Image (tube, rainbow, N blue to C red):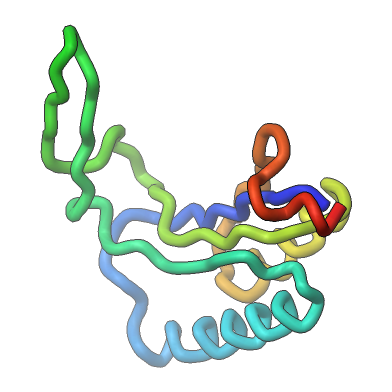
Length: 122
């Protein structure tokens, strides 16, 4: 099994109204339950607004800490899910389900190499 990152690409701007957000959260909870039942769920979570980000850069032997997101854009990572899947096709199917649940674009990326602690699942 490999690990894949499913990152939710959220548009900048205010959060949706409760009547829009409630069915999305319900669908997301159902998907997380499905992932757990399939033993594919590793971790998931939403992120605060990008204005809460802090960037740390190493330069000339020192670390520079600045407020704000690393890059400015019209979208940002709004949340993520890490899944176990036998191959990219299976991970993409979880990405499709996450995109339907959140109504947002989802980027699917494999982790490089073997993830520690998952050797027994191969």
